[in-house]
Image (cartoon, rainbow, N blue to C red; front, side, top):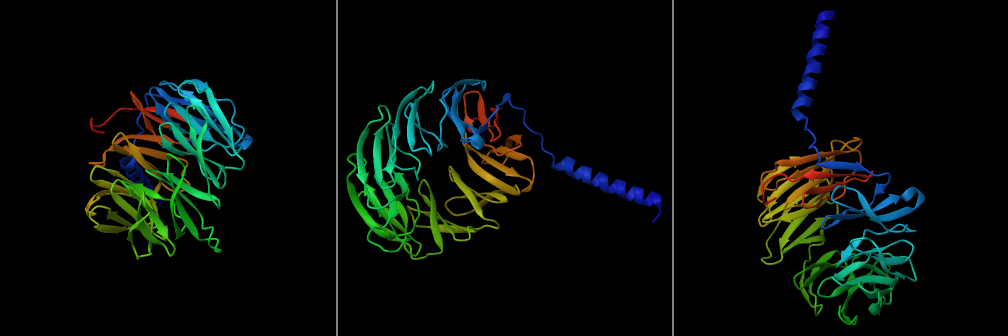
Length: 400
């Protein structure tokens, strides 16, 4: 091949690459403002009025604080240094409650972050505090004892001691604690103990369970029995209403009146109506990441693709290929998804998507993973792990 022909071929190749990238290039949506802090952000921001709250600091030197910022991103308050790694804060009433690896639980006032009370524990926490209602929180005093704490005062209202360490806990009409079965010699045999939320008295117990956290809907609780059979119980009595003998699926989530169960390899998702009993499933090409429901639509993300389907019958509405998905969450009646173009990419993308049309309403670029955005009066507060925060503009239909 002549030299001129080689140069022409290379030029055509480079032009083709340029056209491809131009056609696939997506501009970043300019934020209303952005700031960079000299610390990392470790929790999803919690917005209360025009204030935002999150855990920030430096894990390398074990320094952590809860910060309060205003609607322009300025830091307006922070807690004293938390001497041990904290769980994500929980907003309960007008208090932020946070437990840490140093066996301490603290409540801070919102706004201002003045400390209201702190309580010590006998042992390190294995589960984070559980919100019971707008004035009470559940914490473990030791691995076997559950305390109900009044958030306003820090005083315990009751405690309940179980025979074995608690591995997970959930609260709805009743409190359900999963722990090792004290009557079994098998280490992988668990039981669920139901606790009255008003008195702390044990209401009932069911044995021969798998270590699967409880799920709640209406007056029911969903657990997994020994052998990986999904069971549905009445919360008040503990009576078994339904047992599914198909052990290929594990219960993972309830979306209003729909139960989601997932296969062991995380590539087959079953969606079942708790009202009609009808179900359908979807085979995924890569492992399941997350699912959320908006109106009559379920949005399912595996590692590469975001699907929209009618939640009642599985009828497909649209799909979006995103290559390397990390998170999927609600935002103003729409979807927020984070992803990379490939695993080693230095750029993380965050997209706010109209759930009806799949239209991208805004796009953010980041050097590290984004936290879950929070809606504010003038825009959407978006933080990333590397300490950068920004306010994204209000865009899209009024329904979003």
